[in-house]
Length: 303
Ligand code: RIB
Ligand code: CA
Image (cartoon, rainbow, N blue to C red; front, side):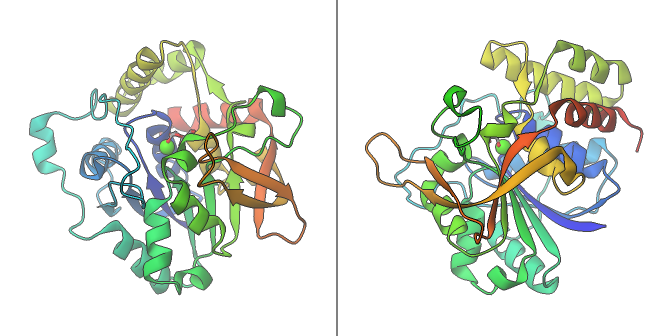
């Protein structure tokens, strides 16, 4: 089993909740912990704890992390629906994360398991950057980072893509620290994640399962779609997570990645340059159909 820690901004876009469920329903993975980042990280940790409870899991540590970007003056985007459809004030009282800071938890776990932990980062990179700054020894001791973040815009679909991706834009300085660290990284950016939407037909399949867990996921998906004013949304984070279960859904190419932190219009942009010698692999194409089939089957499975 592959040892993973998931670092997440669960609660805003529904795809984090889907990715966490996918991880915990995957026998290929041993989830060593889940850390939260960006905005109200205690509330985000309580959402994770509730998801775990719905799956009958009580032995995965959940740890709250840093609330603000490294440059404290950068604003935090908090649309306000976080926790709706899954948490009540009463339930929150019993949902207590580990009494430790996520940055310390990450450092301890990585050093206790040299070259064994895969970090799956599905939110802004503040916790990971802070951990690297506080204890640079984690650089040689972490196995790899699989990251949902960035957009390369150097592949065939480039003209259709936005210039800037949320997880990098929310904390570009942190992203820059992580990309420059030398840790082996697989960057799963919008180039591929925008190709894996789910729609009402997939929602119906999840609805048909009829457990408390799937009913909760359906409610969270509907809340997010109402916010987006849409009937579908992309499974960015589950696609990144799937790379540590079934890497064959994605093709990658080695690239150097630079994060723009100072441009007038381009803060958060990832500048991606093909480079065979780079420690960073960038996802360039995806088998969307097979991935979505795998995702929905796992979400609906009894495991
Ligand atoms: O740009 C997509 C990313 O931003 C995903 O991780 C989504 O959950 C949001 O955090
Ligand atoms: Ca996310």
